[in-house]
Structure formats: structure tokens, C-alpha cells
Image (cartoon, rainbow, N blue to C red; front, side):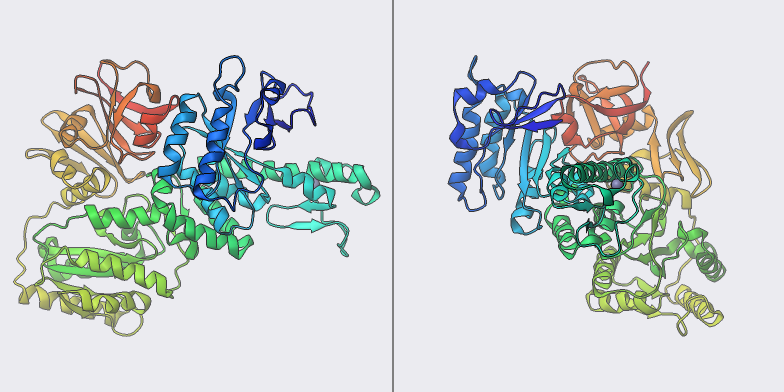
Length: 606
Ligand SMILES: [Zn+2]
């Protein structure tokens, strides 16, 4: 794409180009006629919008919409890009976006100063107020290092005029910083790109040098964007964004602010499944949407069986799932030998950062089985606070005569101590010394479990471990109550815990739990059992489905709780379950979008 200003700098390329109408002063039919038929048009705004009051901002947008739509003379809405001043509220913006949308507009642009100050935050936040299917452009002074963050926030196109501006000052941009060729005493850095490698930069000057540098700089933008796109498809975009924030304190600060202020927007587009390990390295990860969502879902959807009398708190392990680690094998041996079949009365929970608390039943779900943290045992104040909040919420789910056994030390024990005041249960700390796996500590755990067994009168009882885990996973995935619906009386669960488990009723399979993905895959029979809960459903306009996908254009209604990657039930206009599959968009997005795949179907009727 090229960019030009009508009447000043006409670009003669046949590429898709962008016409910029410089200011509202050029609000005239002449300007509109100078725009060629194939051009996208960036509608005029005020040069400095930051000092405008709300009324003036609205006036700026109204002036833009006045340029649209008059047959024969106005600009066509479909090719126009609305420019949105920072700091507008959803309320003020909504009617103006509607007017523009009615005129055919499907794109908007915001401007950044590049310093990540309050104005930049407000501009970024504007992305959350735009219709989900609009094309979003970000203009301004954008260094290469910020591109992954902007892409993560849902922007589709980026102003790289910085590349030319830097080149004009003999500056080479790099992914995380820049290099002034005038000031470098060490000589130019090595660069393998075509612009730098095929000629001797030191022998170039003036326009030749600027042109080589611009070519290099633009390649750097292409490289970072390409990396961001690749990271999204491999589920690592958030990690890339976090690692890129290390180029400046302002970038780190704005990510934290974004996590707090834009969580509902980011969470909606964060997939609920992933492949490979999710690295959670530092404090930037504490508020990552996938992490915060996990904490919230465990808190709201995990309901322990009412017969649990003992709550056993354990530390996390570097190996995931925890059950497969050496330390958790030791813990399991101790609980088995101390309690035998009375184990069914124990609720095990693992304390961990930054997920907070992982019930044993949910250790296979995403991202609990997939995250990787530097396990040092040192916890900062914020991690301890996160852990303590999660633990307090967990303990509220048990009666006050349940007993908590905290087999944890160091930072983990600190979390438990910080929660003591809010807890109504008795808490017993079992470790001896600093190690939870020392002989003394394991003996102490054994002894305490035996004591509690006798004191609380824990009797051996039938325990279907598979059933307990599958109910918890189904509740986690589809909301509380889904476990009961999907594992009805008379159904049978087969398979090994934490491997593949199938659930059958009569001759029909209802679902399969795949340990690799940590989630439940429904069959049509399972979908029919889930449908009465009216959750995770997508309704389409017709009666029958053709092909392997349901496209957004056909979606009539969808559960707003649906996230990309979720297992969903597809129903037709007659409320019949006709398919099950995996969502490719959020529920709200598939209702708004005019194109794109909404659901990949796995099973369908016929
Ligand atoms: Zn280069």
C-alpha cells in the first residue's frame, strides 16, 4: 500500500493506495473528486486532537461522516477510514460509529504519539470500542518494538512512516532499538539484509544512504510483524508481546495498564486451547488474559464434592502435569498408604504462580498443564497476593469443620499464612524443615493424615476418580452443571485418568476427554445433553448444514461466553442439535462478522 495527499504528492503506482485528506479545512467536493476510484481514503481530522473537549471530538467525527455518502459527490463509505480522536467514551462514540457504519464504513484509524502516555493509552483503548469486524489502523510514531503489542491489540495495519523519518537522519532501526550511523564510533553493526549487505554503507551518502536505510528499516518492520503473525498462529503472541516490553519501562507499564483496563476485550480474543508450552517468565504474565481467566474460572466453576473433609495443599512442580513429577509421586504414595480408600474424602489443590491454585482434577486443562515458570521458590508480594486470594476463594467452598493440611514451605507457606485470617478451617503445616520431599516431611504428612483419618472418622468409600475429574473438567469447560448433564446416571467412563477417557450411555458415546488438549470433545449425543443448559451454543439461520464449517455470515445467535478454541454445540432454527465442533471466533464476533469461519465442525447430522 502507498499513501498520498491529493494534489500534492500523487503516487502513480497501481498498488492499493491510501489518500490522506490533511485537515477538515479541505472539506470540499474538489478534494473528494481528486481521490481516485481505487483509493482508500483516510478521512480528515484535526492536526492536534489531544486538546479537544468531548463536544469538539464529536464534531470532528460528524464532519468526517458529512463527507460520506452523497450519491455522485460524496466519498464512498466502503473505502473510507474514520479517524477517531483519543479519549472518547463508548457512549459518545456509538451513535457516530453507527452513522458511519450505515454509510458503509468498515475501517477506523487512531493516532499514537509513541510515548505510551495517557493519550496513547486512550487511543489504544479506542480499539475496544470499534465494531469487532472493522479494519483498525494505527498511525503515528511507531517504533518496530511496539508492532507486536499493536498487533496483539487487534490492529490490522500500521503506520511505518518512522522508517523514512529515521533513515533521513541516518538512523538504522532494529527490532528493539536503533543505531545512528553518524554517531557510531564502533562502525555500523552487521546486518544480513539485502539493503545493507549488498553494498558498503560507509561509502554511501545523502539520498543513496537514506534510501538504503529506509529499505533496511522497512524490512525490520516486516520482520517483526511476520514474527508476530507466526507467534499468533503458534499460540505464543502474548509471550512475544511480554518479551518485547523489555525495550522500555513505558512499554512494560502500558502492558500492565492494558491488562487491567482492556481485560474483557483481550480475554474475548484469547484462545482457550493451545499447543506447546506457555512460558510465563515475569510479572508481565500475572495479568495475562489466559492466566487471569483460569483463576476466575476455577474460582467460579470448580465446585468440590460435598463429602471432602480434608483439604491437602501441595506445591507445584516444574514438570506438568504435576502428577507426573517426582515430588507428586512421593505425595501420592504417602496419601495412598495413609488413607487407602478414604482418599476419596481428600481434596487436593496445588499452589502455583501465577495461576494461583489448581485443583488436582483440573491439572490437565489449559493452561495448567502447559505453563512453564522459573521455579525458584521465591515469590514477590504480588504473586503471594494472587495465590492468597485464590486460596481464600477455594477454602470458602468447604465447610468450616474441614481441615486444611498445608504440605508447603517457603513462598507457598507464606501464601497459606496470609490466608489464615480469612479461613474458617483449621490449618496444619506438615513439613519439617525447608524440604517437602525429605523423609521427615513425608513422615510428618503421613502421620498427620492418619491422625486426621481417625479424628474425623474418615471411612473408606467408593471413589470414581475418573468421574470426579471429568465432572470438574466439564464444569470448567462449559460452566457449573455441565458435568452432571454430560455424565448422567447409567453412563460409563472408560479409560485411564489423565490419558483418554470416554463416556458412554447405552451404546452411544457422549464425549471423549483427550489428555493432549486437556479438554472434552463432544459427540452429537453429548451435544444434545448439553444443549438444555443453553451454553456454548451457536444457532444458524437454516435447517441443515453443508460442508465442514459454519461461516459467520450464517450465524444467527451465539453464547457470548464462547471463545476461540471452545467446544460448541450447533443448533438450527428448529432448536435441533445438528453439529458439534470447535469455535474459531468469540461468540459475539461470529454474530457481528460478515465473513470468516465461525465453527469447524467435527460431527454433524447426516
Ligand atoms: Zn539491513
